[in-house]
Length: 363
View 1 (cartoon, helix red, strand yellow):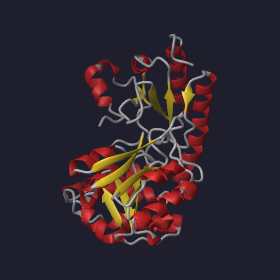
View 2 (cartoon, one colour; view 1 turned 90 degrees about the vertical axis):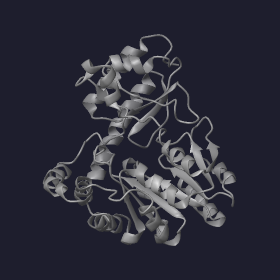
View 3 (cartoon, rainbow, N blue to C red; view 1 turned 120 degrees about the horizontal axis):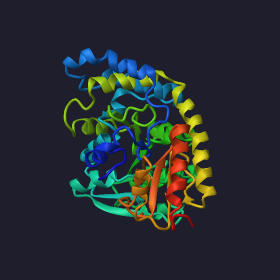
């Protein structure tokens, strides 16, 4: 699976571009890593001579405290699965569940498929229509033979939120069918009114729900790799913890996560900044008559008429965007751009003007 943010491959091919590129292919907070997190990482370096805590005890205490304060939900350490990024958590959960059949929306994050196929799972797909949104008709795809389903909210790469009413019906239907519902909320913290969409408050009453969260995006720490999962079925969480290598979280990442969760005001500041800059970028796309989807997250999916060399055109302008043809259900006409700092977003718009001067990009 190819992801955004792989500048290493670009520099290997074009070493002269080092220091000249602005990355719009990875959806990281435009405010970067908070200073408190950075200082915590630096302070923990000397501890790296020792093995990290295999049970992530202090990190789980910090996560539980955050969930209790922000969502008003009590979660014990047995309900928390920590991992080397959210992808690691996904693979551990799938390895523990070993679903025979699973439902995946498309387009959506590709790591669900990547995790499901090695365990011999038969995949079923809910294919979004031209709106690329998850609608109520997904309920017809949930049945008693389904062991697991993934719901990415907001979805990646569209940034679209599933209506809370539809989410409620999905929760009810999966409970009735005995289907494990894995809700990927890794980008939800970027969305206005995010609490109204989260399944975390439902965990205690619904043991079939799993919620996936990530530190990577909100706290600008993609290189450290840290994510976690929440679930009411402590037996499953325990099996998932043993389903991968020991020491799932390194010392520096654990310190960063603990420090990040102390910064209670940080997500709100990032949300406010992202909302303003997202409107700026969407306005630019609209003015240029480029089709885009009305994202609630920190990235925007757009589509062009003649896409053949758009990625390379942007690259020549010093901008890296995400090609989305490898998302099931999309083709080479789809691209995704992250919401960055305003000065970088201005560079994107300037580059957009240059690349769209060539015939065929706009409607």
